[in-house]
Image (cartoon, rainbow, N blue to C red; front, top):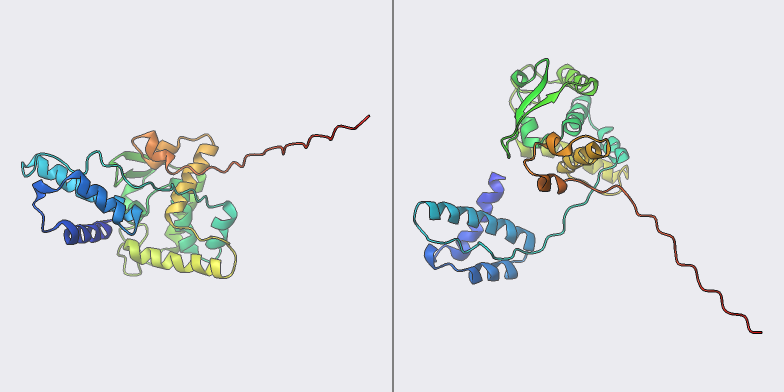
Length: 256
């Protein structure tokens, strides 16, 4: 996320860097959104600019935020649901340690960043104690037979003993990029061998957790540590397929 935002700032600076901050107007923002080659990236860049302007207003640099009220580009919500078969297909190509990490991600719904930062001291008889990195929500993920099994496998197959539950052979925490690269190789192999027909992202595992939790009658919002239902809805993938009955053709009237 930090790397992405730094790249957004670089692009914004190329376009708006020579302007006086107080002279930037909503129509400049609208034009930027309309002419950007990537509509979704444009939305992200303007969101970062808006944060900067809110800070500038607070310290008295400007009197208004030109991003406020400008309609963003429309985005198609992601609706990729990873089936059990697809999840297991990729998992079957992983070594036991990586299999356990996939299972931990699924049953807890934790973000990858929170998983990679998880320390052994956060785990006790109650469960896993975490504070969501994005929302700040404190949680205790209660122990269940499935969670106990995953934690046991992680301990059994960990490369070394260290502070972190998921660590490198040197006992250090993985970077998001480093871990993702390892997992993507297994996913891409599954795709190449046609074990899965469509690719998916690691983050889709979190969406699968939310969707399956809701299907099981659990509280998906509490599982993901969201502060609003709207945040959780973005993760829920519909598994239902509408069944419809086709129209029956009218019989031609017979002539008497």
